[in-house]
Length: 318
Image (cartoon, rainbow, N blue to C red; front, side):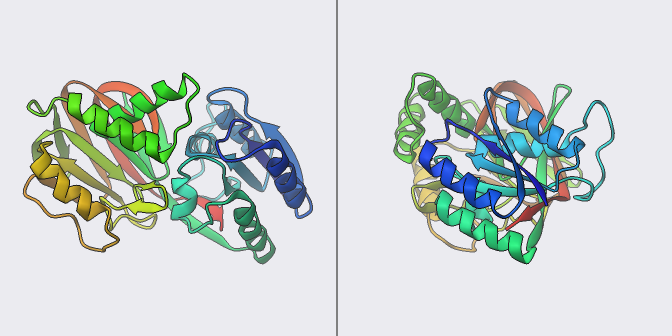
């Protein structure tokens, strides 16, 4: 079995010694080529090359951003060629968590430790265990990008943007930093003029949204070891879910925060919430440019984004 391992040398929770141990362990099980990512978008280019060269597996040692790039490299066209439907015709994915949150890896049931996760991956390789998962897809202004676990518009994307700014100054994206940034940003955010409207085939129009969370699985994210479940019914085997907020005041948010931090199969309750489950497609339109994030990666401000479910898109060794 031929495998390409993509290593993000700046991954939050790994060091050179850990990476060497993992590379030796994987190299003993497969015919392994190792590539380090050097710039934004490099993982996508490397994954596309692996697909074009007929590799059986692409493994990723990195965080959710590196994994997202890799997935897009596996699914998007190479040199203008067609993308095979479903998960056939492209390498399987192996995920080894090395970031701060590792939402996708943890949603797959992998340990949040790179060494333990490598042991689980080696077992999957030995036993041939594969899982086929669906993905989400966002389309905006002639652009398209897949996401593994979540996307968002509004307040949550503004927080992601603020944290990325802090990372640009050399600070790490820790759970504490996300929480503190979210609290500080909440005090300054506009709580009176919602910008977004939700529409879609067979979906009642919902106006006046301040924030929208789009989920391809649950949990949406983690605060340390605690999972956050705004869309507890979301899964890799169904369409997309959405939670939208029509109010941003403390009296609306505090009960919601308590609910989504509780491990429960019940949907959050509240008349100010807009909720969708297992949808194939919907669109968010804003009356002004709104912050937009995808798998925790801030992508800019846009007025219209369409979200689609892509069933059975990818095979994961897990």
